[in-house]
Image (cartoon, rainbow, N blue to C red; front, side, top):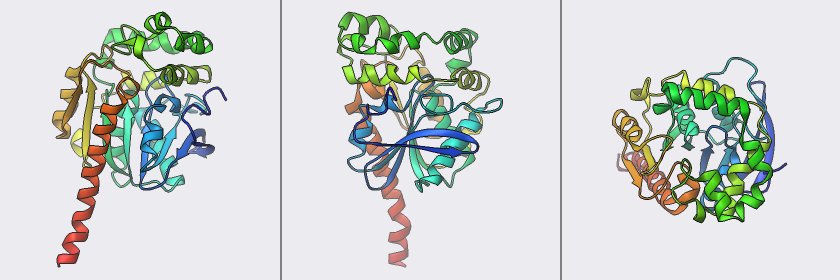
Length: 295
């Protein structure tokens, strides 16, 4: 598999969830944590963060249906269909309840999972969440074109050359993905390009994204949440972050000089934000035990 070993000493597993064969990665020990990639991405997108998080957590990293090594959905997709597969996988791996960190489309999936299954999702980090600007007509056309033409397949075949060339990194990632493509780590270049060789249906995920409003029922997200954004994001502007943060009642952390692929461009800032939410969840989970002890 083209991207099977990119995120370090994680075990690659395959299981069928609700009729769909899903590939996923598991690593680390401790309390569970789930990482969900964005549209057109894959588990290897977490190459910078997954190994670090696995130092203190049992980390589950799936390929969404139609992405990477996972089968596509069998019927007309919706955000709920992706969310249900993620939660189903969490239950199969005995990692529910758990916080979910979602990037871009993965953040939208995480929110839908928290709405549909509050018993399974104990927290959400929404990193550059898609779905607001994505609903505009221009964005719909871009999503449809990218899903059908799949330009990433060419870049994926040349990923090692791109990773070793600052000029090539600027050509592939500049203007949309990262603020400074010449300093984008080589392993991150491979992590974002390699899964695209395996995709079977990213178009359906794009359609689900642009035809549903992920802000619907955000008032039903009861778990602790954090909104994380790159100030130079050219795909989903930071104004979208405010639109998510307000109804969620969540803090918004903005990372300076950072684009859409913040989880690999500024992993240290992302780690700090993720740990802050996990620590907050841990403190909240202690409260019932302390109250019981005092009682």
